[in-house]
Amino acid sequence: SFGLIYLAFSVVVLLSAVWFALWFAEKLARPVGNLARAAQKVGSGNFDIQVPEQSGEDEIALLGRAFNKMIKKVKIQRDTLLQNNSEIDQRKRLFETVFGNVSGGIIGLNQDGKIEVINPAAKQILQLKLKPNSENYLASCIPEFLPLFNRARYAMDELLQEQIKIKRENIYEDILLKITTRRAANGAIDGFVITFDDLTDLVSAQRY
Image 1 (cartoon, rainbow, N blue to C red):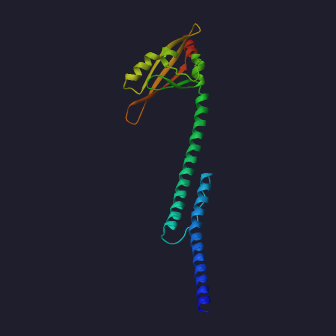
Image 2 (cartoon, helix red, strand yellow):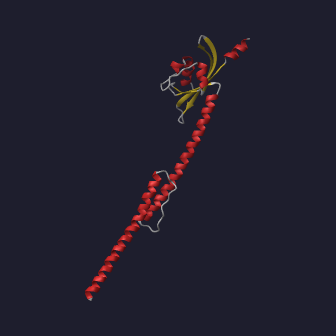
Image 3 (tube, helix red, strand yellow):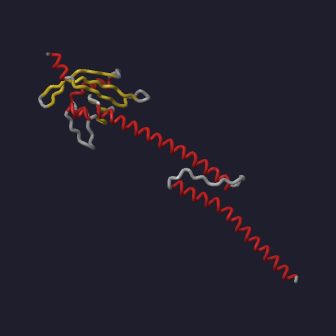
């Protein structure tokens, strides 16, 4: 009888230990599994996911709370970035619309005189055919603009203008040329903006 009681007690203790081990393992594995599944959803682009937070100050509870805080911050940063990108795209489309429909010529240069941007009106007035995906410099493409450009590189004035003549297809055209200096925050020259208008018809009308 004593042996049977001892055996039964041992079995109960053993089963209790196994049950407690399974319960503890499940309690430990569940939060880790939740974190793993949440991390997968975040990787797929879902930043609204949150894991259930547990009470207490153990490592698993702290890890869950830290994960939720991190995802909230990432979501805020992602939303801010998307909003900024949307605003940049809208401004870019507006700039391209205005830039492409201005009747006067506009050319953007870097500090070395390399053409970075040029609007369609400038190409039409100057009859330029720039090679795509190649470096185009003012000195080789529009040498008539070079004297005023060289003055702008060393002058202290932010705006220089001059009326010049250019020859295209044996026809002289009167051009009102303006060069504005772009400067960085530290005052260094960041580039130049050239604007010009074709005054040929106006000058001809004044002569008569």
